[in-house]
Image (cartoon, rainbow, N blue to C red; front, side, top):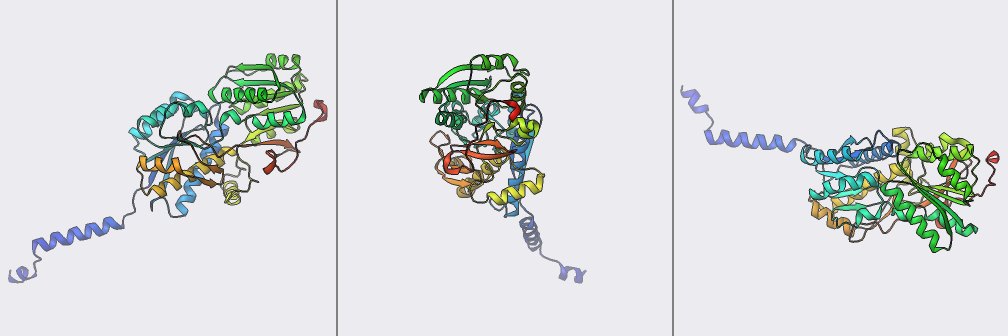
Length: 396
């Protein structure tokens, strides 16, 4: 008994040792990852763009973690498939914030879905960096936590109008899908053409369920449209219109779309030659880190990155920079940094006004030449001169 008594550790000493040991073990445990919630259209009509954008998020996650994480913690994206559907996206953002308890959110693909989920993120006072929404009206509703990265939608067809005007063409036709972004882009093209003294001889808004554009293209042909501008979100609509133009021998001198995705040329082959497309980004631009991004993306996904991928990746980098400068996950502190931040990423320049509205990115136009995209506008970044074909489809 005496031996046991003499070897006893006093009660308070045992408790202290236990607390110290527990604290040491706890300190050695890595902190849980910072979770970033989002949806992306992995199925449905916007899946081509949405899948590329999701890849951009995931590559950004990898690179942040390889570089030591965010605020010394690893980053983990939680991304749901919104199926290109407004209600689904809205429901998932509510779930991400209230049930999944994510630390941060980033935006879905496109203006329509961004407009749908913005009330949710705004109500919860969550900073919402939108990588791929461009419609001005979204930023004219007094929202405080929404930030724009793309150039404004109203400028999406500006390059086509500028080049057509320089060529002396005057008769403009507009086809636009009945959705938020396409209508903004189409109306912007009308305004730009009118300002330059060009005549908008045809304008048609089509329902999103449209699959056959023959009636619209008959009118394009009847009106002798020289410059046909098309604003839509589904890539399939652009492809279908080109195919119908060939079938019906609709010859316009310039045809331009509000998107430039490699699948356009892959599907159409030589029929896609000379078409123009808006691109907010191309791999040949002189932005820091762009070569490394292209190489890493191509290696990870076995695909060339589109501007949708680069937009998501670049937006993620903007968000990271703002959080690091804020030094915390406090939403109001991050918001203040984003309002005053001026930065250049692989996606180009970022700066916003008091609405969170992009003021530093004007976009660019590509043309399909010999099966590849080349930048043809604006002049300061152009890789080649625009090519103007004869209107005979047999010569394409």
